[in-house]
Length: 136
Image 1 (cartoon, helix red, strand yellow):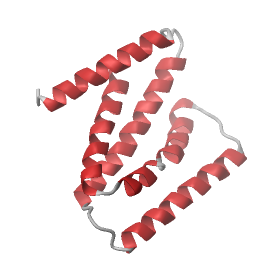
Image 2 (spheres, helix red, strand yellow):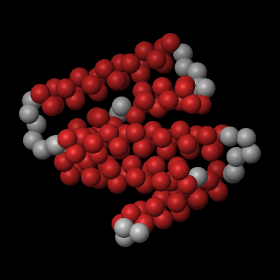
Image 3 (cartoon, one colour):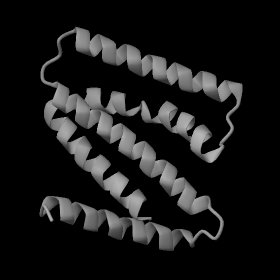
């Protein structure tokens, strides 16, 4: 559960750092890239199967997000830097990894009860944030 908590905590910190560079609409729309990325990695790492219709919907989401991001960046929207974009990408990737690790922890053989898992995740997130904020 430690990797899950760390991924989600670091994802939230990256999100806050990204919001310093870009407006919320850009970050939120880019964050929707989590859906297709989660599906792809879920297939590769967890053996999840999706129907053709589900893949089409994910492709539509990906295309719409990509189109919005392209128009946003071409319009010369205020703010943003390569460093800020790095935080947005970290936010997405770490969130996806946390989701995959979490799914494995919740659905794996011999999984702990849901309340136990969620309590441990929250404790891990608090400890991870405390360590990062105090630079420990």
